[in-house]
Length: 138
Image (cartoon, rainbow, N blue to C red; front, side, top):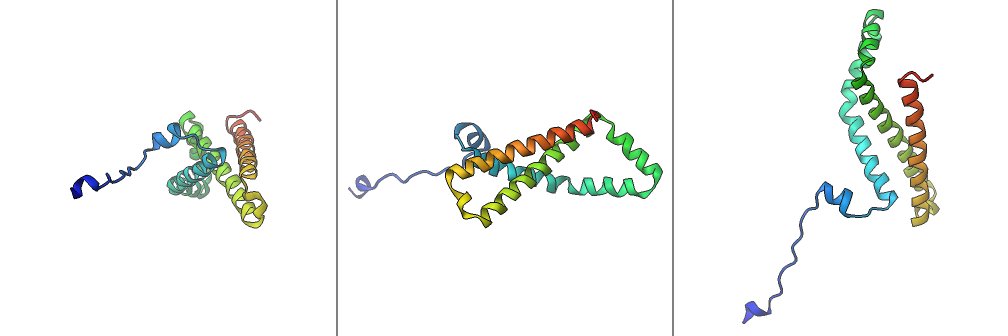
């Protein structure tokens, strides 16, 4: 009789990345927050690689020429472009968070949406300008 009176316990499961990205409709502020984390992880992972390349480019004129030749590869340019996006996006989102810390009027739902939109637009413009410079448009 005691068993019949017990309610079934709720079952909690971890959700996967696919559910976060596709099943839930996150607001733009949530997507910017996730993008801020992803861009920070990308920069952290590739930091040793970038520091090594910077060190090698400053060693001598010959190593700088080798570095320029290495950077002329299309795959390397795409990797540098992704890292450039990560930097611009992380920087803009970080400035957004700092402004929200200083001005608590920006913490509301509508203000969060508008500041997130500004982050996406500004980082996209900066990334496009960086890509144009990287691929030789000017």
